Length: 178
Length: 317
Image (cartoon, rainbow over all chains, first blue to last red; front, side):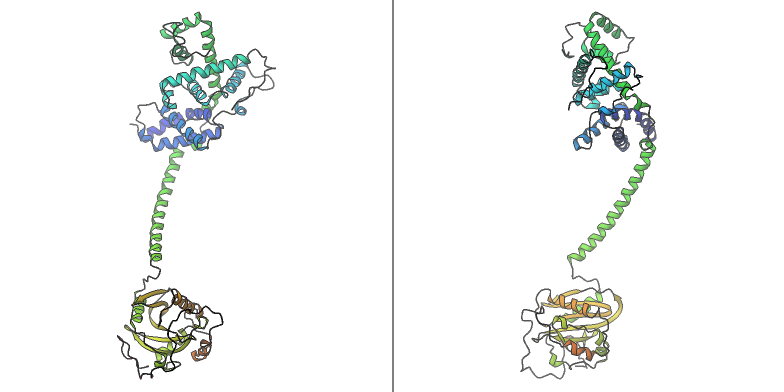
């Protein structure tokens, strides 16, 4: 088992990943960092429980996700979705390349998905967790994870295709449906 | 159609399934592996699958790009493990101090509750003994047996200024004398109300002063309220049964009226006496029950002296 100093050292390396994952769950960066802080404090309290059998990142992600669920249940989490205002808008000068537009459209379309599907898609996209690890983080069976991924991605694709024929100038902004 | 991993693609090829496409799109299959090559071959043969595959890759890339800046941001100080450890250490120290404070508070609360559970309890042993001795005195003292109105005893004279004015409570001082209560010599002052109901107040002195605190003692059905003012010990006994709390209120009045035993403004107690014997004001909350039989006009003849059981004969009587 790692010593406390070694654990802290490993923990420090995971903080950027934790922050990024928290950003996918929390409405605002400050709220995401609060979530990360809670997670780190809990990890420091329970560091002896981490046996090294699971990857530290998945152990931390699972802890973070559980904290997020607790906050959402207690009403301390204001919004589980990424607000549209957080999604980067292309600049008016036309500097925005297609990639930025794609990002914007994808993220906006993502907001229309059910939370469970969105969580699965984003978790798999942002990090290199295996399906088994991702399922463990979200505390669901692997089959359920794959099912959510498949349905969610198809829905995203359908949204993308329906928006594609419209020219950029004429395209109406997607609205979030709650 | 929304393909599902469990079967929808099984018909397209035995070797490549939906989950394989997804795994390759998610980067979970090494791109240079044989498995990846087989999937790519499959995709070349199936444009629909290829479109889906490309769409998933694009989605993943967009999501990664959107959240990538968070990975590059510097970690704020408050999230650094050292900071969190230090804060945790401080919090533990605070909790430890709080626990100690809580334990101390619990002891104080327990002590207070113990006192509250015995509101008349008294840690003053000397005062307790004095009250015990007063409670044992017989109740047959009569004003008629006292040299009236004021004793000439040296001790009684010393306590003149310590005798309270109970006029507000409807009692007037009728006389005083020196008596032995236990191992002490005390001044006994007798008060009576308009109906002739009597109270006796015993005052004595001893060494160290204590803060004034009213106590009560009941022995053989007789109540004694007692307290200490500095070196002076007081014990107030009723000759008769009083309403609950009545003796306490009277005792409280003595403490208030006399400023806890402070000398009155007048120099001579005899001068106060006139004020003391004023009848109680109309409508004053006097005793409503019969506290003592009114003195009969045919009272027994005044004895030459009074001998209390357990007391030596007091020469002043």
